[in-house]
Figure 1: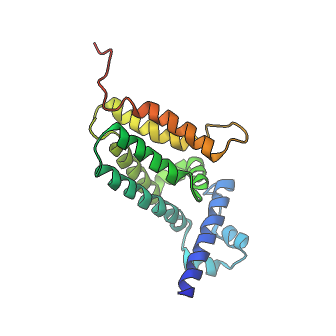
Figure 2 (figure 1 turned 90 degrees about the horizontal axis):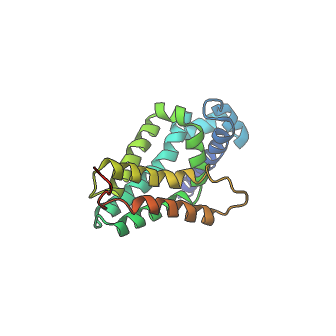
Length: 195
């Protein structure tokens, strides 16, 4: 049990340091050697846990995929209505505003080009589309699809688009959910003004 706990703790330290370096310098400019040096371990010790930078990124993404899968499964068992949409986006925001998620979101935002080429990035994109589909379930109109995707983007972009100094995470989350709710309110509603 102790070995497993120690291994898990070491993996988490590696992930935290890698995330810090990937965000500071960029994924492509960060080497495994730099990660090992910052951790004050040998490259061999690092290789025991992760064979490549891709494996480290995959470990970030796996955590997110599990959370998204859980949220989507919950939503699919609920009625396709506004209350479910509001709860779904709130659950997603809760996941995004806890633990190391803000740092991971900054990493994703700053390294989009690299992520497009990694399998982990493609998996994440696919799950985000599933999440958007769950948000607009019951309304397959193009406008609903766009509103659902933009409501997710409201949560994501609150980390880099809201530049107010000294804003708290709670205030940032509240603003993101208000904007998302404005978008979600129109899903499932008849479109007006069509000719």
